Image 1: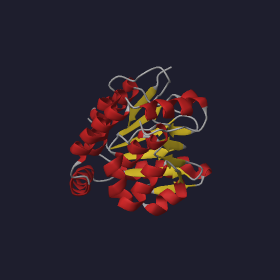
Image 2: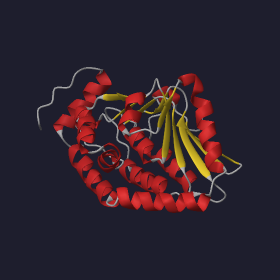
Image 3: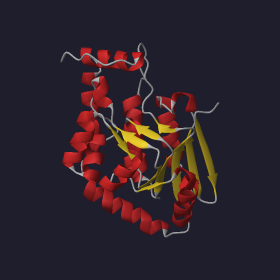
Image 4: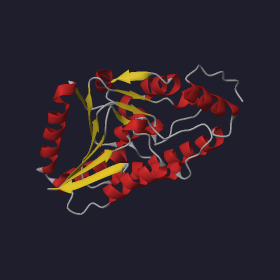
Length: 249
């Protein structure tokens, strides 16, 4: 089974994260596949990223005794590829968007979510800091106070409240989700592509002026925290489905 499905037709690029048995958890190869698809922009007027099954993405794949080599570099590349794409990128949030899955959604230009879905920045729950430029993307979207709340608490934010806060663009009833996504995609596909590209460039320059430095800072922090006892305990607690006992080491 292919973990990332790519479909190109009539100027629309559709990318589906296709690992539903693991809530579309992302490994390095999958993240790079998404970037590769977005980077091949010839003839594309709009792109949509979604997930198969009941999740958009639960974040980076994690197991107790394994690592995901190159994942931070791949994530950094993907965030840049989304924001630099010369066409609108739509996140079709069909369920949970957690960790870097949430970062991908917020990096997109427009996000449409099922009302049953939610976003979650759960890094703190496993003794890590956010990646995927979440520390800049969230602050730019919802302000410092709300960003701190989400990033330091690790709480779920329901889709409708995420729209109210400005983290998502639109939340629709589950049964209306597909139609809402297609309506948005069709509008962008028929729109002024060059104007969209210049608008994206200007807005991102104004609102994400230190994106590269943010990604570098997050990568350094993640690398440091990955070697702590708190991260090992948080990861074990997550896998074993129990409360973590953090010791500050």
